[in-house]
Amino acid sequence: MAEAMIEFQSVTKQYQGGQPAVDQLSMSIDRGSITVFVGPSGCGKTTSLRMINRMVEPTSGTITVGGRDVTSVPAAELRRSMGYVMQSSGLMPHRSVVDNIATVPRLNGVSKADARKRAEELLDVVGLDPSLGKRYPSQLSGGQQQRVGVARALAADPPVLLMDEPFSAVDPVVRDELQQELLRLQRDLAKTIVFVTHDIDEATVLGDKVAVFAVGGKLAQYATPEEILRAPASEFVASFVGRDRGFRHLGFTTADGVAVHPVETVTRGGDAGAHPDSWRLVVDEQQRPLGWEGPGLDSQLIPGGSLFRPGDTLRRALDAALSSPSGLGVAVDGDGKVAGVVKGAEVLSVIESARRARQGAL
Amino acid sequence: MNIFTETFAWLADPSHWSGPGGIPVRLLEHLQYSGLVLLIAAAIAVPVGLYIGHTGRGRVVAVAVAGALRALPTLGLLVLFALVAGSGLMPPVWALVILTVPPLLAGTYAGISSVDASVVDAARAMGMKELQVLFGVEVPNGLLVMFGGIRTAVLQVIATVSVVAYLPLGGLGRYLFDGLVLQDFPRMLAGSLLIAALAIVVDLVLAAVQRLVVSPGLSARSKGGRKAATDLSAAAPAAAAVQGGTA
Image (cartoon, rainbow over the protein chains, first blue to last red):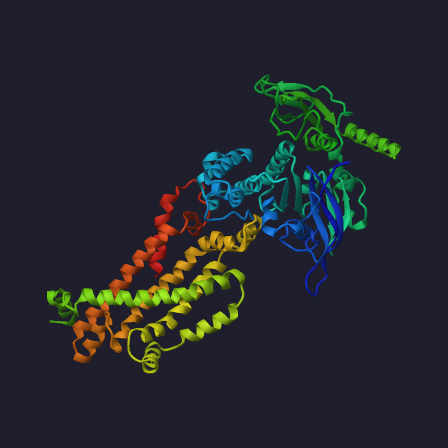
C-alpha cells in the first residue's frame, strides 16, 4: 500500500450563492505516483487542484501535504514548495526562457548564476535544445512553451507537481509526445504529480490512479485506470469514459498469448514484375517492414498499418491487425525487423480467454 | 516677405538666442515647468494607477474622476487657480497637474491590466508575493502600454505649459502671448515651431528610453506571431519605430 502524500479531508469549496464547486471531497493521493483528476467542465477538478497550493482556499475541511496542514504555511512559501504547470504556459513574456525556469530558485534566494546553470540543465531534461534558453517565450512553439513550463515547475526540485490541463492546448501529435516525455521524466524523478485533464484518454495513459469527478464537485470514482475502464462505478462514469472503453481497456493487458505466424516477405526491388497471388510483406534490406503487395495490384506498394512490438498490449495487437490492409498485423522484434504476423481472430480469442481468467479470479 | 520667411528670419536672428528673454532661457523654463508638472502628477497618478491595476479596486471611481478632470478647460482652470491662490509659480503648476493626472493614471492602469491574467496567475502560483507580482511581472510586462500613456501625457504637458505665459510666467509660451499682443506673427509662429520641435525631441528621447527599458520579449510579441528563427535584435528597432510613429 502506497504512502499518502496529499490528503483531502471533507474538503468543500462553495462560492457565494452558488452550488458547491467541490463537495465534501475526501481522498488520499499516493506519494511518487501520478494521480489524474478528470471530469467534465464545472466538476471542480481544477478547483480541487488549486486548493492544494492555496490558489483557492477551501470553505471547509483540511488538506495536508506530507502530513502538514497547508494552511499552517504562508501561501507564498507553500507554493514555492510545489511545481505548478498550467494550460497556457503562463511563462513571463519579458523574461528569457532560462530566467523563466530560474524563477522559483531565484525566489528561494539561489544566486543568479547557480539558478541559470540549473535552468540550463533542466532544458536538457525536458528535451529542449540549450540554445533556446536565450529566447523569449513568444519565440517558442506551443509545445516548446509547455516543456519550458514543466522545466520551470521542476526547477526547485519540489516533491509535488501540480499540472492543470498542461497539454490540452497543443495539437494531438505534440500532446502524445509530451505525455510520453512526462512518463519518462516520472520514471526518473518519482514526483507526486496531480494532473488535471478533461480528456479520459490522457487520464488513462498517464494516471497511476484516476479520480473521476462529477458535476457539482463530487468524486464519482477513484481507482486505477484499468479498473475505471473495466468496471465503471456508476452510469455517470461509464458514460464519461465513453464508447471505446472496451477497446481502450485492452491497453492494460499484454499480448503475450497471441501467436505470431510466419509471413511471406519480399525485399523491395527484388523480383519486380511478379504478380503475387496472396498478400506479401515488402521489407527493406534490414528486414524492416515497408508495406504490402496485394493480389491483383501490380506489385504496387500499399502502406502498412500500425506495428506490434514485443511486450505490447492486446490493444496494440488488435490495432495492428485491424489497421493492416491485409488483415494481418505486422509484428516486429526489438530492432524493428519483421518477426511475423498476428491475426485479428486470434487476438480476439486471447482477449476472450483473458476475460474468462478474470472472471475465474473474481 | 511672407510670414514663413519672416519667421525664419526671426529664428535666425542671433539677438533672439541670447539674454534673459532669449530662446535658450525660454526653452529651459519650459522644460522646468513641464518637468515639475510631470513629476508631481506622476507621484500622484502612478501609485494610484498601480494600485487600481493590480487590485482592480476603485476602477469605476477612477475612470469617472479622470474623465471629469479631462473635461476641464485648461485656461479657465489656470486663471481660477491664479485668482484663488495668487500669483507665483505653483498655482499654474497645480492646475496643470490636475490636467496631467488623468492620462498618466489611465496609462498606468491600462498597462497593468493589459498583462495576461494567466501570467499573473502563474506568477502567484510560483510563490511570488503581491509586491513581487506587481513589480516583477505586472510592471515589466505592462511597460509597453504604460509608455504609451506616459508619452501622451508628456506631449500634452509640453504643449499646454505654454499657457502659463498668460499669467505671466516664462517658457516658450511667452513668444505666443507677446506675439499676440504685439501683432508680431512671425514671433508667434516661431514660438509654435519651437514648442513642436521640443515635443518631438522629447518624444524621441522617450522612445529611446522605452527601447532600453522594455524587454525585447515584449517587442517580439507586439510584432505578432512567433518568430522562432528570427534574431531579436533585428526585430526590436522596427517595433520601436512603429510605436514612435503613433505619438
